[in-house]
Length: 262
Image 1 (cartoon, rainbow, N blue to C red):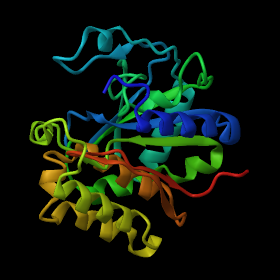
Image 2: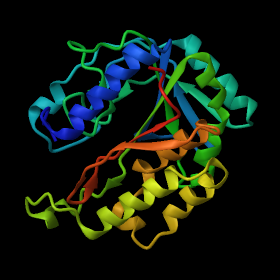
Image 3: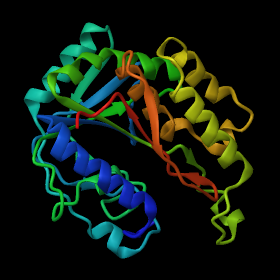
Image 4: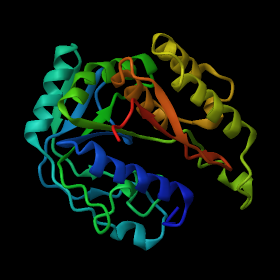
């Protein structure tokens, strides 16, 4: 997906521009599908202030491993996140590690694509937090609820995964962009759950993992669980699907909770 002309890449750049020009957060907190904590019942938070990128993928073209992304962390912001999480009786461990980027800023499925250093640099700290090691949607939803108050403190929460993510079945598409049946059905089910009234949202989003097409859409749920964190953090704010593209065994849907002031 080393394609800067892919429609998803363009949409991510639009979201990034909105964040840097309209939201203007004092820091960004990121939950990425690519980082799960090692210990059950615990999450981890990166307190490093200067880091490189993690290239935790294999078999891709050489340019994927040459990506750079100028950024800084913040122990102060990490401490604020830790305090909020601990107040909800969730165990959190500070660690120092490189930034997990969901591949790189030139790939369409990478959250870093929203912040091109040349066109739209992110000039505030990035603090990354892990998922739990479990596939429990309620556990991740409650994690989101624990950090919900941070949104009112001008901290931007980004959750990075994919609406449908089955790399194994890409071979079945044989170069066709026509969505597989489960891609279409799960993508729309996710939209319905995310856009539901907040009183019903946790239950409906948890039920997604029980659907008969769930393991086709997500052989592992690490790319689905980040949005449960985002939904929990949203409080009573409603979710909106901004855009989607169903493509083979993938869906590039992008969501926002709440509104952005004009």
